[in-house]
Image (cartoon, rainbow, N blue to C red; front, side, top):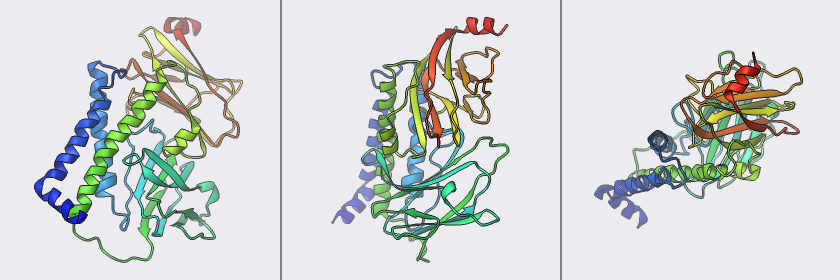
Length: 370
């Protein structure tokens, strides 16, 4: 009966109208009273929704069939979610936890590579709960760098990524220190035990996919608008985030996260200082807009990491966010923004060292270096 009703909704156009209504409602997240009301930030906000729509359609329409999984890219240069890491190459595949899958590939030389299975989703309960995790340190690779990873409910002796019956997604993170010098892992995914071919488009699945995509836009926008609202209470600070919350929405368990909100006048700079950089596999700091999208790292220096930041003689680091170059190491650009959010992460640090922040006059910084 439900199938017949869904088909009728596709034929009548009701399915499309419902899709559009949810998208229309998503725009309310950009118009929230605490959000910046100026034309520039509103424009970025509505562009953000259009970007979420592209991601949602890839996830829930084009790449939605878990019988024929494929990797899509859920955050990249022109589509971004929740303080997307500019040093990451993200990949995402839809799964059915009752199936088994194989990821084949070549390790490459990227310093950090992790795989996590998840259940839930921003389009449903607003969470992506982890059901399995493995990273390259725990995997076995052949001498030429090739490998196979099995995703299943049944344990495997090596290179096993657990699934639960409710698992519905795989998220891959590849983290670079220097993109120009490092090679990403090359990956392919397939279902184990099936040689079937995809069937023609099912109208019922299309209706469900469109609605999931629209709800993904609305719920993702709401989630991170809530986060940005909370950060405004403590401007120009970078405190530890709620780590349990970060994990509940799909974070990597090897990462310790920080999030904050910044606002600077033309004559001000924000110093982000770490007394001692701890031993870790990776770290970085990034500057984001209000909507928690990383600023355009293709054309602006908006992030620093373990490779690119210049540490001082004591093993600490001082990073400078300012509207113009103060002539000091570790300058981060605002890229035309006066407000925004920022994020920092330690990966694999046994003991995270919390950063401190302070706002100073840009002229004082420029005089101090003379």
